[in-house]
Length: 122
Image 1 (tube, rainbow, N blue to C red):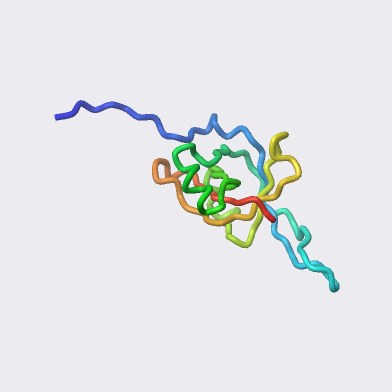
Image 2 (cartoon, rainbow, N blue to C red):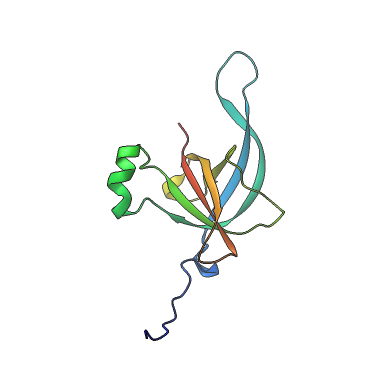
């Protein structure tokens, strides 16, 4: 029988160091195409992960090398993330970039957090 070995969770509260802001957009008024920011929905601290090296070849084939995984504490009823929302990361490396939310799912290792998969907005 294999002995018990403690494995710490992947995300802990101390890992949430990067501020993120979730937005809702609306179509531009008038004949011009595009969208403009409607309102800020929620802001919090998060852990940001890039595409992993082992998944890089598959990500290149799918054209999703700009995808990121954002782990945030579960906001319960304060905010429910949706694929119609956008997220901005308030860090020097990501300044001026908006990411469209692709999917939201609970973290299987730790139910107190959720994972948001987002791709760079074109």
